[in-house]
Length: 380
Image 1 (tube, one colour):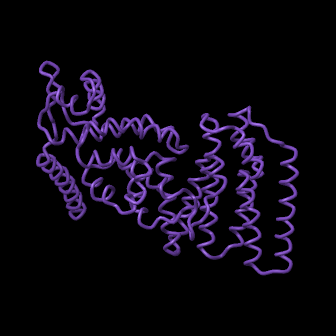
Image 2 (cartoon, rainbow, N blue to C red):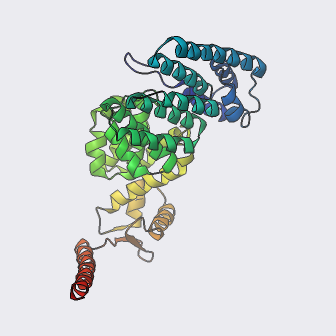
Image 3 (cartoon, rainbow, N blue to C red):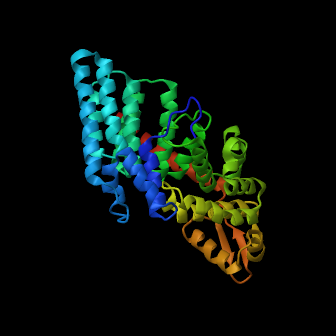
């Protein structure tokens, strides 16, 4: 439900989420058929539904006729605005036509129509709105190229100046892009955290969903101090985190170092991830990264610990823990060694003082080389 003052979520995104749920068997196909008919979303049906869900049926000829009738009315509005009204009315008529093409999932016509509206627009703010609209269409149709292009264009426009409200919205779009398109989880978590206090992009996703993404990204990438200070203590997170009990309990377990609880809540979190259209493909990755974060946090407190004690703390079998830690060690994700004879895990953290010494030597050698080159030039 949208509260007063919030923007309604883009209907093409709701349709994409509904199609994902129906394709996975979580909702009945009749709901999707009705939504497509109501929204006149024949292009979306042809590209995103029919190839994956042949059982879905809509009246294609009737939809084409209704689409043609609507477009005719919108074209008349554009023409009338050009002949009798000013630039603002022309731009609004073009945007209305573009929004219709986007609402039914027609990327080609929507892109052409929005580009025409973009050329008729002078102010930076409305141009950013066009970039946002095309980004949302790309997100619904899973067109990453379109999303990257529009986000890059929005950043360029923002450099020319814009209001704070659109700046804050761009931060949300950027966070979602980094998470969904690029897999830049650490950068995405920072963008999510930065956007918590100023979130207004309800046309893209709901605030509870935004918080869910933020917390899950942080669980996979952030250490305990950040989780405690910027996530678990955030008023914005506390406002809606109860909507996701497993995520809440896992976050609190990280803060309180309750590793058994982390492992107990993780399957429920991954089940929720599996039902998210934008996250489901990362289910295995997120499960692995959250476990790695928990292992690293536990081991950080010890110079050595027995495999038996650590397995008991996490509530898993020693064989499972041994194999998983070995994979992380081989991938240089954990700085520990396992003595298989004694069953002891030994920390092998690099000496920070030694690392600083080597860094000074490296920069010193580079400086000496530059001075020698400079002295040769002066001599010549």
